[in-house]
Length: 618
Image 1: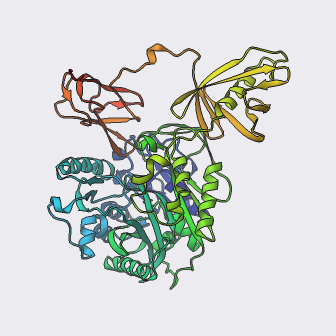
Image 2: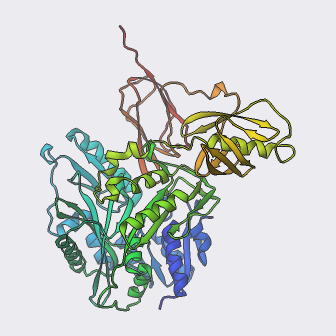
Image 3: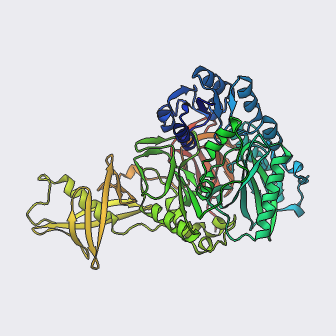
């Protein structure tokens, strides 16, 4: 029996595994980088062991340090979570060689399926050889790892070399393995997967299907179980292929077999030899704890002959600190407040006041709803997101909410091109027009000398706020009867709550402040602007600013001040949160300044370069 378990991971998955361990009476050990010293997973574990350094390569990808940590903390088992070393056969062997229990499949099974190219060969699928124009479009893909890293779509043959180079660099950084390959890219397929669970006694469960078609940068954003609208024959085929893959490598433990479904046919993609991010939807539908089952299997206990029956429908969204409207740019900073209503499941690695840093994936949480029907599950999840409190960096919450309510999704007609078609509409700003007024009234009350409104008339007051990238100025007046504003009746106003009568309907606005200029009105973020803007804050035309915090990992070969660049030419590459982001010339012109150097750490808004546009002569 396992008594103490180390999780070789961080964030929400470590916290989620610790929760099951607590229910089973198993003591827990966390590992943490220097950047994660005060992270939630390090705080909730019974014991925490430091991994010196901040980057994944220095810490969570160092299997030797993790094994030493397990032994030093007295652990007798290791759970890899997902990502990092979870699909690394050498790490699995190192854990076993140290006399520890490995909560995962045999190293040989991981090895057989670790490379997507070898997995395809095992399933009898010939790899794509040298890419020709007739093969386009193709998807360049990392052979190891997952999570959408190391992937590039190539539609023109001349773009293939750059795609291969970029994918190799990103894969090497994220997984320590730069091997990539190309496969045909199906434009309108659905991403469908089958959850499996196998024991050491020959039993293999298939726990239904999941649909994970809503993806950004080939990383899943919305997942659900079961996959809607699949013909009974196709479901049988998917389950059969999943069992075939598991038995082909004598699989043990939890795993997922992934497919692209197009034109009613299933195309094998890969087998993930680990727990998946989206496993909670399967747990909700089948009423099982997959982590608990992983532990029992590792202890040698048999599964029942058949899995429990499925019930209802579950939908999960991944809440990211990112800005979908700005090329999914990851965001950092303090998470002041994260709260969702009761009735949904929240898996997170953050609590109020935690810092979201630059070194790791920007996922804040997973929110999961389960209900008797798909429509009810979608409504419950959308309602929870709508009422959630999120104060801190920009998130994808509005995108998720709009996605759940989009007619293509509610009808079950989505595919992997969903965001390619609808991103602009889904991210169109729709801020509350009365939020700035509510913020101004609350601010005025908070600054009153007597803790309330002065009982005298006054001149109109003005306040400026930045909201959704635009400037808003509001006007209000103090009177003997209280504050007034044009077109709106003020029912109540204090420093935290404002109630406005808008066209006969009373609306409540809860106001929160952080620092000197950050204001949140319900879920609308505002920035209090100075009365008189600073002229020095103006940005020169053609300035290239860092869109996110990160590290400059590459500057275009031969790029120097005075060079001529063309519009769209890649100039600088940033790495942030395990993904690379390309910064290109906005116009054709002359590079008049270059401040980016390889290895430099930058913050959002850092000036990287300036391109002076060439003016055409008449």
